[in-house]
Image (cartoon, rainbow, N blue to C red; front, side, top):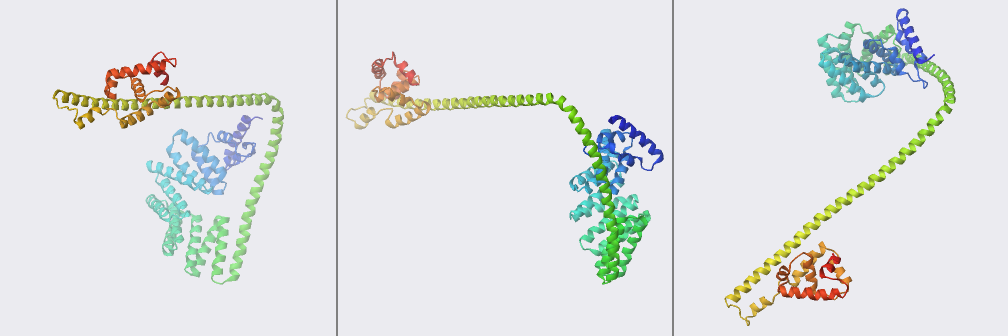
Amino acid sequence: MNRGIQIAAYLVTSMICLINCTSPLEETYNQKSFHSETGKVDSVALQSLYAYVKNDSLNNLALDYWRSGDYQKSLNIINIAYKRAEKEENDTELAKILNTLGLVQWRLGNNEDAMSSYSIAGNIAAKLNMTRLLGLTHTNRGLILKEQGDYESAFMHNNRAIQLFRTEHEYRDLGIALNNQGQIFKNKQLNDSAKSYYLEALRHYEKADYKDGEAATYYNLSDIYLRERNQALALNAIQKSLRLSLQIERKIRISEAYQKLSEVYEAFNKTDSALKYYKLYAVTNNGILIANQSKTLAEYQAKMGSEVKNLQIQNLKKESQLNENRNWFIGLAILSFLLIGVFFVYRHFQKIRFKKRKLEIQLNSSNKILTIKEQELKTYILDLSKKNAIIDSLQKELQETNAFRKNDTAVTSLLEQKILTEDDWTVFKSRFNSIYPGFFGKIQQHNIALTEGEIRYLVLLNLDLKSKEMSHILGISPQSVRVSKMRLKKKIIVRGYHSVEEFLGELT
């Protein structure tokens, strides 16, 4: 029987149970066929099962499982309801479902997600004027904050819930919120304030006939009277809690009441009564533990049997499919190796492109620096030319006014002074070398005996200066520049060069 037929069969079962059973969804949910091979709930099957169930009913079913302590089933069902409400964009149902989801997350120990669910549900409830639901979200947030020791924030949320429930006359919810507020004061050792909230909660529980809440609050009230060393009131409160718990047959509350009675009698040195109720507590508590263990054991046994059968079926399937899948595995392995190879080749080319781009950026940067330095050198040369022009002008002026006298030591010194001094040459040479590194070293490598003037001529020729410009910079006549060029040419022709420009080209 395939999965589709199974689902159809259980849907029919569900319809029959709707007529004959009190809780058809719960019974159908527990069928083994809706569990996967790993023993987990098959969400696809569950979604098919609950396809025609209203979200409100799913929310109530999830709450029933939550109250019974089966948080995993509650979570599975509420998740289905949540996805459907979100898809339908039904904010009213979504707010209720988020509040229930928060309760499940809280019981599963996920307080952060629970607070988030309550906050979103509260925002939607406030927008849609769902006053009761808004109050519940405040109550639930207060519970978590109280457990975390954030009493100020818990007090604020509880106060907001109390105000909302008073307005709507929701006595049961109001009693719960008041009881929670009393718990905060109890934890802070403010007994009078805690007592007043507990007593007010009891009055509202009576209006709503909510015995479970009354039992819990009387239990808390007995703690306050015990702190005050008031034996009569402490015994009276816990005995009322026990009577109410027995009426509603809440085993956990009964067990707690027996334990508290034992504590009260022991506190007032009534050891016989304390021992009596402690024995009752032990018997009741052991019964609860045994029941839980039996339930857990039965679930594990059912799951184990299902897993064994599923394992056998799975092994048969694996054996029959092994040969069919072998070629697929080989093909996938080859494809994986090819993809890995392509990936590494791609990475290699990426690295090459990156290095190329890096070199281009470095080259552009170097060219920019070279351009700047050339501009600096030309500026320096122009400064020298201006200096030379000023001195030439001064010399002509002295000659025209006959102010020049050869025996005038100062003027003679001025005329004999070179425009490009040794200091000027040192600075100029340093700047030139920073732009054309290796230029002077290459001259030395040729082992040609060049004078300092010829080297300077080569340097200025490399800057594309004309003879007249060179004469101004070097402080000599244009004829002297041409003579330097002729002497230089004779020296390099011997070495196999046809012109000074050819020799310069090799240097640069």
